[in-house]
Amino acid sequence: MVMQNKFTKEKQVKKGEELHWDSQQWKSHLCLMQDELMFIDRLLNSYIFEPNTPNLFERLRDYQSRLGKAKAYRQDVVKMIARHERDLGGMMECTDTNFDMTYYQKHKKIKAEAVNCIETFQNLKTEVFNYAGGILKQRKPH
Image (cartoon, helix red, strand yellow):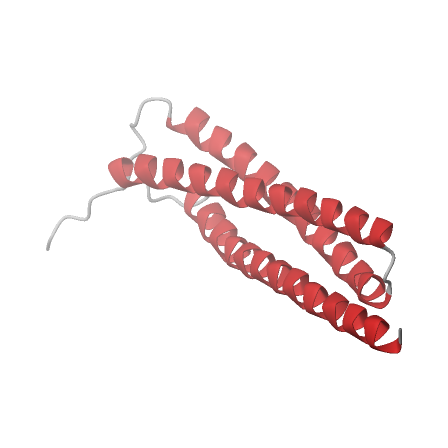
């Protein structure tokens, strides 16, 4: 019986380490996303676009608005992950399968949120870069 508990405990620790690794990966992507958000924010608020571009002001405002939403969404997901990681310690100590399943369901939901947040931002980033690439001021050679 003691060996059974030890095996179960080791198994819980291994599961916990795998879940922790997932969380670390999400946090890494979200950290990179933070840097990219800052860059795009600076880009959109700079004066490097051709001023006579049709609908420039409206397009930049739309991107800025969507960027603000992406920042807020990212922050919410970061908070979810932090709470989730705090709960991970309890999951590793517990051998209750009900708690285990609840934790895994929560883990899957947070993973879905993290993936959605990152993918939504990647789509916005691609859209901004494609648009900006076509309307940047061209420096004339001296």
